Length: 178
Image (cartoon, rainbow, N blue to C red; front, top):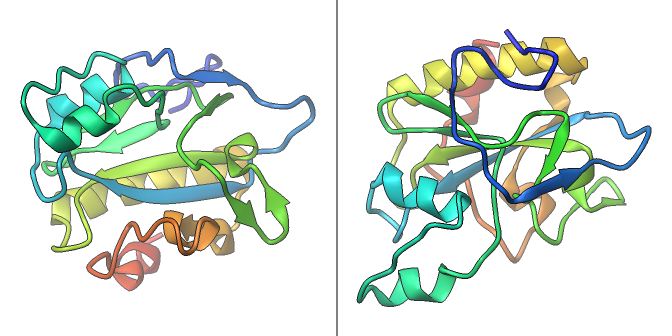
């Protein structure tokens, strides 16, 4: 399912310029689950794609203006309908975690894969998203020998700064079917 160039064959690939090389001899051993909507609670997949591709046109929207110059990305985005989009090959370092720490290890972008769910802290996620997330996770766990215990939310690696995937994300529903 993952090619030699780090691309998932079932994903729509939209190459983001916002990535760099991982440190040498760095094992990928963490999955980070995020939630994103622009602005919060508005589900417009194209705006997320534009953000990760540095093509965001904010118009008159105050929030979009505030983020238009960010250089961010994620390895994957799962839309509300469960479609899988890949922005960065898994062997490259996506810019999704920001200032982060996991079990005393800083800079989680170095050793993690970031998965964004189109969603927010104010409502639940769609069944289609859980299905795609589980399929993708099974593939990544197998490919990189990541233990289930090393699947975390953005909130877990950036507490006080981030809250996603939020209180409506069902960890039990997600993890139970892995």
